[in-house]
Length: 60
Image (tube, rainbow, N blue to C red; front, top):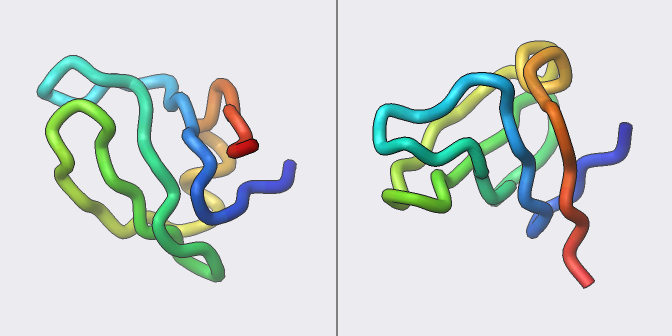
């Protein structure tokens, strides 16, 4: 699974705003994600993210 900056990842659980999609802002041991629905930003560990990803939409 290759996740890069700019990709949109769809997670299994939805954010309280109702969106399942997150934009990847930073990658490494941790990821910084921005909610597509409300622009809230979070940091999440690589292992936790890889476990919870349902789909990846790669940037063109």
